[in-house]
Each structure stands twice: as C-alpha cells, then as structure tokens.
Length: 205
Length: 205
DNA sequence: TGACATACATACCGTTCGGTATATAAGTCA
DNA sequence: TGACTTATATACCGAACGGTATGTATGTCA
Image 1 (cartoon, chains in turn brown, orange, yellow, green):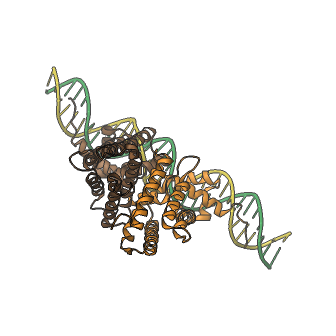
Image 2 (cartoon, helix red, strand yellow):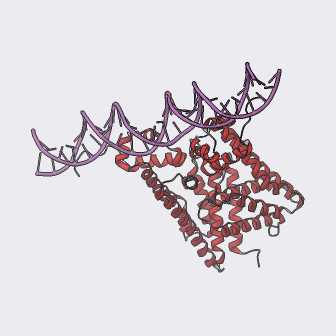
Image 3 (tube, helix red, strand yellow):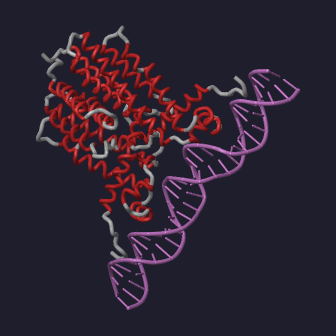
C-alpha cells in the first residue's frame, strides 16, 4: 500500500460511468461524456479502469448485479406464488428504468443493438450473449419450478420463459417511447393474467 | 431537365442506405459505411440526399412504408379473423428481420434507443415519436374493430394495443439475441392464444 | 456546334474521437 | 527526512468523424 492514494471512490465513479452507458449506449458514449459525468480527468479514468471497452465491461457487470438485486430477485423467491413473483419482477424492472431526467432505456437492450451492428469489442459481444443466455435460463428455471409445484408437466417452461423474456424486453423498450406508466402497467396485468391462466390451467382441459 | 443525368437509381441507392442504418443505427453508421454500401462517392451522396440526418429521415420513411406493406397490412385486412391477422402480422414482421448475414434488428427500435440517448437530430426525434404514436394508434384501432365485431365493449382496446406493441417490439429485439426462430414462433402462438381468448371471452364471465 | 448545367472524382477542411507522454503534486515506507 | 511510488493535470497524438471546395467529365438545350 505505497504511493499516493486515490481521492475518489472507485465504486461510486463506476456507478456514474454505468449511468452514462445506460442512457447513451456504447457507441453513443464518448470519453468526454465520462469525464464530465465523473468529474475526473481522462488519465485518471484510464488508470483506474483501463480503456473504454473495459469500462463498459465493468458497467455491464455492475448493471447486471444491480438488476439482479432489484428485479430478478423476485423470480427466485419461494415465499410468494409464481403469479405474484412475475408481477413484482416486471414492476420492479419498470421502476428501475424510471429517472427524473427521463427514462434511461435498458443497457442490455442497447448492448444487443450495438452488438448486432458490430460495434461492440469482441469480448463484450461474448459477455452480452452470455448475459442474455443466463437471463433466459433464469426465466425457464423459474417456470419449471412453477409448473412443477402446480402439478403440471414442465414441457412448456421453455416457451413461457422465452415469452417472459420477450415481454420484459418489450416493456423496457416501451419506456423510451411516449407510452404512459399506466398503459404499461395494464400490459403487465394482462400478461400476468395470461401466464397465471397457463399455470393454473383453468381453461385448457 | 438539363445537365448531366444521374447514372444511379436513387431509389435503389436509398434502399442500400436504409439497410445500413437498419443494421448499424444512426450513431453507429458512418458516411464511409454509406459510401462503401452504395458504391457512390461522398459528394454524390450529399448532392442527392443532403446530409446524414436527411438520409436517415428518408430511410425512416422508406422503412415505415416497407414495414407497412409487408407486416402492418395484415392488421388492416377484413377478409380474415382478428386472431389470424395478428398471427400473420407478427410472423411477417419476424420474417422481414431475417437476413442471410444475420438479423438486422429493428430500425425504429434503434431509433428510439438513439433518441433516448439524445443522439438524433431534433427533427428526427419528432418523426420517431410520431411513428411510434401512429403504430400504437394502428394497434388500438385494430382491436377496437375486433372487439366491436365480437360484440364486446371497446374499453380494453387501449390495453390490448399497447400489449401488442410491447410484444412486437420485444420479438424484434429478441432476433438480435441468440433465440431460435422456433422459440420465437412459440411465443407468437402463445401470445396469439392469449389475445384470442380475450377477444372470444371464453373464460371470463 | 457552343453555352450551360449538372454529375463525378480527388483532395481537403475543422472537429472530435479514443488514447497517451510528460511533468508535477502528494502520499507511503524506511 | 529522503527515496520511492502513485495520482493528478496539461497538453498532445494519429485516426476517423461529418462535410465541402474545386476541377473535370458528360450530358441537355438553343
């Protein structure tokens, strides 16, 4: 522990960095943006986090961890029913996107778009794919448990999981458009109702 | 009609330009990309279409027109039932995203993301918002007709419209991730089933 | 054919991009 | 205290960005 110590908190600064990537995406974020948002100088940023790509990588990690703790956590609870879990998950996800300065969109979403355009560094491309795969896996596992505890075959877990992922992605994207919060909550309720019906099998024989 | 005539077809070139924006987004597309994709020189591009922003604007128009003719058209047919119309709409939309060189994502989607990040020129921001509003309006109008002809109150049209828009957006986004076509078609079938149930009111009293 | 208008090609503009060399300030350890 | 190590600040780098001036080729109209 020798030499001059840092005068800033690395975690706090990474939080600011993540916020910028969150709002502007990888291609849309410039080093000047990060300098302005953090209050640090460019060499300090590079010394602490490496280059732009590694800052992005660290931001993705932080983002996932944060989303995992605020939204995905509901899908892993076993003290509430599946229907309630999904509702809380979707609502928490929507809430995390809200921001006084307007919606922030979704970092994973813009990552996938940037990746699709071939703008992400190779290593980050792999990470984004892995994150998406993990998310879907989480959804499928959730429905396997739910179907099992409802005494139903787990064969539909895959389809339901993909459905929830699609819906979740769509909802987050919709916040960047002019759709009202009330409308989105209606969508959540409708979708939760559909899934609940599928789990309870009230209608199909 | 004096002077040397153009040696390229403006519509065809605009199609190439649209394709680049489609795959790479506004921020991610450089003039060099467009030069390479069209085979024209930079001054020719600027002379024919103005600057980057106006090329983007023209691309958005073309994109919307194209999507309108291939996918949205199904929502305006009255020779098939509502359920079938939605299924055909979603499948056509998915098909239009497919491409030999990998999925192309969604231009409106990346536009909204870019817009959310504040990277779009002012005029384009307004256009994107208008396009989104028009899309939702189309969805809502579709469900109003469908509910009416099913002898049900149209009060749910707004929620169903937003739901379909959310789902449609999510599906297009999912193509940029590793999700298989079969999985996405399962999602389509499941969603269509949910909506059909709502329209037919088989389960609710 | 000649005057003119437009398309095309080269080469260039100022600015901003991601990233860094260098010098100085400010700490730690002996 | 003094040697050493690290953080900060300024100033700068080559490359790529969006956009254009200029010269020449090629067409239309009279």
